[in-house]
Length: 114
Length: 113
Image (cartoon, rainbow over all chains, first blue to last red; front, side):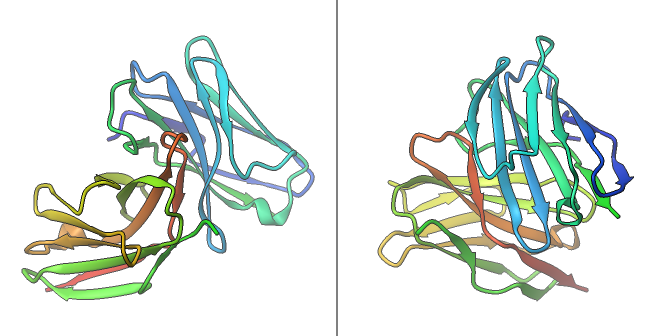
């Protein structure tokens, strides 16, 4: 158990809909990262938050947005969903003093868009 | 360009043998390379990393080798066990972008009894 909690574990929805994925980082971790894992693109970095503020953006679509709240949990919002958005979405967190590269991943939220 | 690729998509080894998983990278600006293990239904789990100024780093039953001349990274697992069966990803951490990792496509390691 990495200590990172993601909900829901599974989500099935239709094209055009909007969903919200939730992440609770490990206790004490200020950084939250979102990654998308799909069969054709592999694991891709989407966005990073540090202590409530956006720190970096990766390959995140404009239809997607995220935020980190004062209690450090984070939400990833996916809107106008398309079939190609079906994927595993992982949240990861890191402690202040960890070695560079060491992320603690949750078990993911599997999104299926029909 | 920026890419991290793996040589083989699958690898099967006998239990007790050593495993070697290879990875090629193209971005010379990376300062860290990391290996992750992903078991079925779970998120990636950190195994070991190596700084770009090092050639070798050892952990518990694992060794990572970095050859900057040919831009090659390998993960060696000693005395492979059934619990080692998983997908292994190499990832690069670009200088100045802490933990915003670029992952390779993964190698499925299967440990045979």
